[in-house]
Length: 345
Image (cartoon, rainbow, N blue to C red; front, side, top):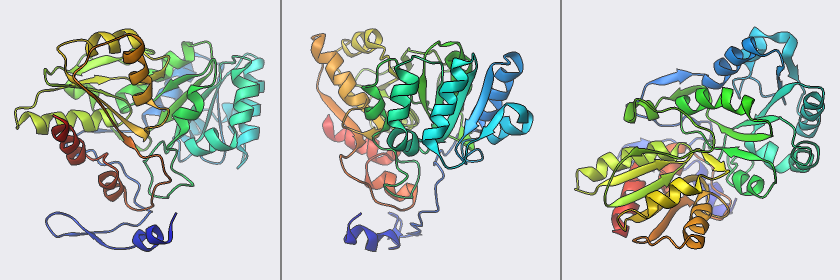
């Protein structure tokens, strides 16, 4: 963090209508206006699955309450392991339990899994192809605490790791749907996690939506622009599409919750339709994430499109502050997504 950014950390900002907006880093809620929310979908889905499968155990590195694993711990204390603030031990213990026939769910913050525990995940879990499910809160820019807690590069780190499946769920529908599917998946999984009161987005736009591991799904059709999005940026893309429709800009949204393995067939097929501008949108650095994965797919397959752009976080350490301020600053807010898309047409 620079001296200038430190000075701005507590500087009052003004919204377009002149209202002052606090920028305390303590504000860490995800704005989702107009959507119903579900309380702790991951914790409740895991409890439901564990009632049917005695192999499921839960581990956390002193963050059960902040990954919603505490719900599992309350219901099944004999299968809940509090490892303390020791992420490397957390992953090693999860690997050991997997070797004994269990299906461990290891939870912490995304920065701690991807930065502190990477070598242990690589050697003890991924190389052995063990069924450890690593589910991590505070992905990307979902906290105002600054670079120490903003996991802006976690997907890039894990994309290069063999055997690892990567998931970036959009909402409560994705989270509840992914839990039984990653349990059934035989290898290791790294999933980002939205916790607490999580919006229910996808079924409002597509009532028959069901999470499918490894599959991208079209949530909204459109003839002018194709947005390929993941994580909560699918929600932002859908809301931006509704705004742009008022300006006669027709935006399609293809939701891609599984980053690896990427659904290259669906992405290539949809991008090839109609010469539309293709835009990727992700809550992650533009280096090594969904955008570059999609670009590589289109290039190697020779898909002809009407232009390509990426919405994502810059290749830098981000500032601290209130999420609405930061999302607007870095182009992840609905208004900024709509503004960028319109400027590229």
